[in-house]
Image 1: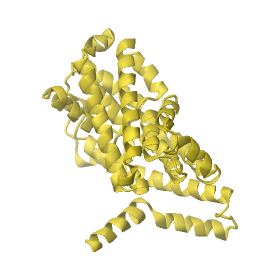
Image 2: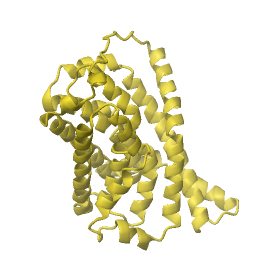
Image 3: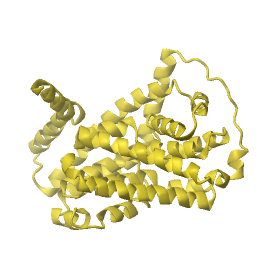
Image 4: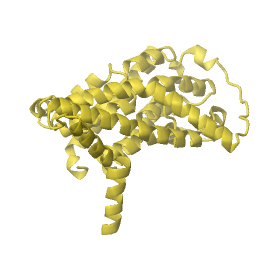
Length: 337
C-alpha cells in the first residue's frame, strides 16, 4: 500500500503537477537575478509555471479526447441518445458532454442540433450544462492542483447537477418553450464516413490547434489573475470575503462568476490561488461552475434558441444547484483537504 501511495504521489506531483518544472523555472529566474520570494518575482514564476503546465496538459488531453470523440460524430450521438428516455437519457447526455471540450457558447450549436433532431429538452439541457462544466481535461488539471478527491468530487457533482437540471426541466414540461425555428430546423441523418487511424490523428491534431487557439486568451488572463492573487493580494482579504467565516461567500462567488466568460481551463489558476489564500473549497467550486455554466454571453446566445420562461427556469435551477453544492463542499471540506 505504501508503494502504491508513493507511486500515486509521484504521478500527481511530478507527472500531472509538474513540480519539477516549477523548480527549474525557480532556479532559472534566480540565476537571472529575479527574487522569486518577492511579490513580483513570485508572480512571474507562478505565471510561467502554470501557463506552461496548463498548455502541455491541455494539448495532450485534447488530443486523446478528440481521438475518442472522432468515433462519435453528431449523427451517431443523436442515434445513441435517441434509444434512451427519461433520466437514463439525461445521464448519458451528461456523460457525452464530458468528452466534448467546449466552452458554454461553443456547446449551444450542438444543443440546437440535438433539439432540432427531436431529442427531449431535458436531454439537450443535460448536455448543455455538462459540456462546458465537466470534461476529462478539467478532471486531470484539477487533480494536478487539488488532488484526486477534489477532482473526482467536482466531476461527480457536475454530472449530478447536469442530470438533475435536465430532468427537472423535462418534468416541468418546458419543451414548448423552445423557439419554433429550432424545432423546424430539421436534421439529416447522414452516415459519417469511416475514418482511418490517420484521419483520426489528423482530426485530433486539428482539434488541439483549434481548442488551444480558442482558450489561450482565457488561460493567459486566468493565470495572470491567479498570479496576482497568489503573490500580491493579502491572505486576510481573501479569507474575510471568501473564507468559511463569511456565510454569504458561496452566493457572492456565484453571483460574481455569472457575468464572467472563461473556459474551465482559465478559471482553474484563479481557483488555485484563491484556495491557497484561504477561500473555502465550496466557494471556489461555485465560482468555477458559475463562470463555465452560466456565463452571460452563453445566456444571451441561448436566449435566441429558447423562450424567456425556459431560460429563467434553466438559470434558476443551475444557480440554486451551484449554491447548494458550494455550501455542501464548504461544510465537508475536511473530507477533501
